[in-house]
Length: 386
Image (cartoon, rainbow, N blue to C red; front, top):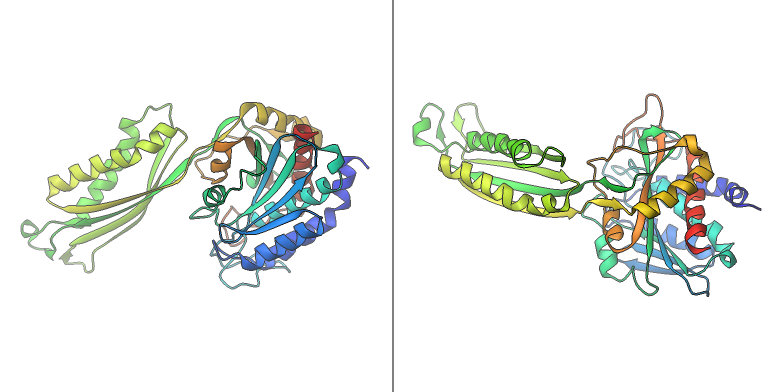
């Protein structure tokens, strides 16, 4: 059989795996049932299986016995704390958890690739690691798996990942070289003033008003401090202050995120923000506590590997169905793998009319795209290791 026929022979099994996993969603670092299911599937392919990496991470290792490069193919296992509203016959059996970001599909495609490649290992050299990581949605499982040694023994030279993406048509493949997904951070800020009667503001330090000024100043950090050709986003997603209509608030709390494709800007966010918050609070007579947490670095695809993935994708779906998506300010901890190995993260189209967005309680996708992702993984593996 040729590769397309081999993948098609596993089509029903790949779809069944997706549905099985969709029924048992587990949120970050709670992926016990999911990891056990994945480990069992990998074991059935004849691969050596390692479990318990970074708590619930699973790695299936295909060794060819022939010297060559190492390839890592990654999927995420965690679900979101979302109550499912799809009405699917295989809906979540876990109340308050749902695979609303397509991770069930990602796992099914990578397990499909493991099934196919394990049966044609004589056509490969080197090794393939099928990596299933916990906690992509946060706080991030890629870095802990790297610290646990997933990139070594055998060494990983190339890394691949895929995300189902409603922003491009069903069945299309999106490949983009260079910066593709943004670096992301989180900040939490508490402003402390002096509360009092709403009719006597001169006796108070209004934490709410100070916070409002901080929000505006943070927006000007992007519009007036960053090069307009280097995109950046600062979003305050939470703001809590006040307890009554006639009381000046003594505290204000806010949380938000900063996004950019530029690593230097990413690393500069804390100092930039500290300067602004300190200045506004000092002018208003308020105190503050700023907590800043680095999350994921920019996701950057290696240009040469991206070109090769594009060629393989064209062989799967045809040149007309391969697109170059716009970069997105969304973040992905696949970026950590791509910092340490040449690789590519690509999108698989799940868009259709009246589609629900990612992270929606109604998110779903056409299962017809799953063999497309599996075949793409396999073709890239054959190209790199064949």
